[in-house]
Length: 316
Image 1 (spheres, rainbow, N blue to C red):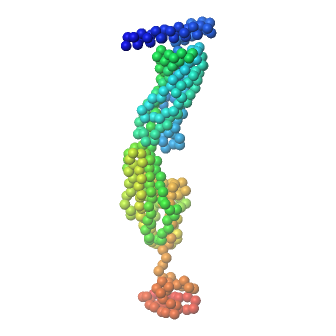
Image 2 (cartoon, rainbow, N blue to C red):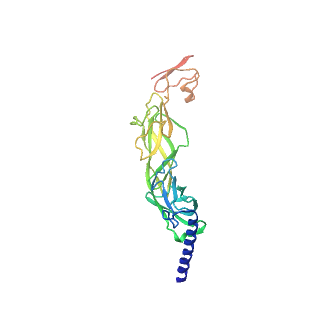
Image 3 (cartoon, one colour):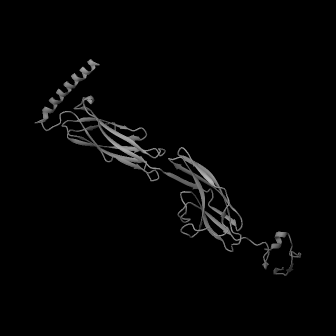
């Protein structure tokens, strides 16, 4: 160990002598100049906040500058140290004497990282001056960046169909595929919303519309979750005109939805229920066809039918 340290000291002395000779060739006075090699490192920020639910938030670019106030060219080695954050940047940069050199560090954050603050350290060290290796004689410059990961949960739904049509009094049945991404393990109840076609938001459901299906819950674990949710909805049997609206499936974080146009929705139509026996049906469209009765026959159902050439009339 003693011989090794002595050798480093001797090499250092020789390098300093060579540097002084090189500097003396083009510097009138060395009193105002730094003699030993060194570098200054500064970056555009020391903290970053990552919101994964914003576009391109996971990819960040940091601008950094190396300042060399020495009169000779320096080669600077750069390192990016973080246990969980992926980075990309130059490994070595040449900086001319009495000048600056800029470089970029690209930060790529995995959206599965749990919400907390992570550390990234950027280091710069002069490894040669005037082509002479001397990394062990220089100090390491460091710039620390705190990267705060915020909580996020993003979900979307796929209905599989564009429209659902039922008759009044008939239950509406459909399945919605609900999937989520999140950096937290959690459970969410998935709920059904009913919105009128021209309404700006959800209001109180009209009489006769009631949810009768069981609760659907999605479990998010290790970054993602998926569930096929089945929904069953009763409809009013006494409507006299077509109802038009939409069905919207969202998780419990949303209590009241927006319009059918602003949300990812399923068109929902309820048609008035057709009557079994209609007075005054003319032509060849007759309720008698439903019972396999010809126009030349007369049957009684708690009353009597009277036949003419133009129509069938009933009395009860």
